[in-house]
Length: 335
View 1 (cartoon, rainbow, N blue to C red):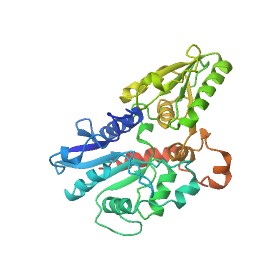
View 2 (cartoon, helix red, strand yellow):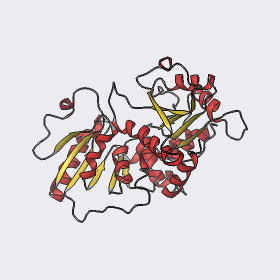
View 3 (cartoon, rainbow, N blue to C red):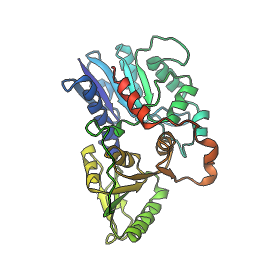
View 4 (cartoon, rainbow, N blue to C red):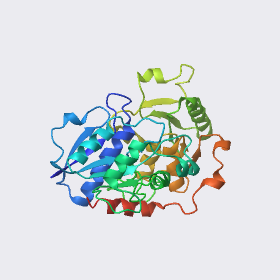
């Protein structure tokens, strides 16, 4: 028996390396628990249709890393995910959503307690994972990467295993290793935001870091549409700042192994530094970044205007600690 991983990596679109990191990290985690001889297949829920697969019943389970619940008024992302879920349901194959995460702007705790899932999304998720407070015939389970996603699912009546953290947080070769804190900062990376409105902010931040630390500064891109050179503003000074394309395979993120610290907007740049035990500050753009910051006690701040946040009223009283995330993540791998 083998497992099918529903990859969210858009190979024909932005080629976001963070999406590729999710699937490959989950593969390594499950192998670390179930053994290296476990077999896996990958299918892209962005680029492929379920009709491309003959039969799902050959799989022990379907694994969906980083699954994004669809909020009312938003389009499902990736667009083919529900099609694969429906085919799995008809084949009586369990689905495990591992580290599900939302992405609405600006991503506050208050929003996570008030927003509604799309009606069809509630139905599909309840089929696979069950309803809050009810016994059901659901044979799968879902976990969340942050407390805000857990709020959304539970408040919408979808049974949730709990918060286990983002798949990318866990490198099984580095668990329980010590932090790597540089004595001197020679190289800093600034990850480029999703929101175009924040891109000039990222460039100005890079210049400030260059002047403050007199070190090499790299602006990194995890994914984009179009040609790389077109992403760089013609007014930006390439003599002071280095611009690096990290889109594509998750292995491209190993560029960060030679960087001392990160300050930026991309959640999976921040996560790469945390998993490799190096310092990072995340500037949260939406529910992805802010959910992570709420859950792991900070290590960054929001890019949204203060009036849209009112932090002191929105932070949870008892954030989920990192050790709890790790323990729950491994427990979920009972599949």
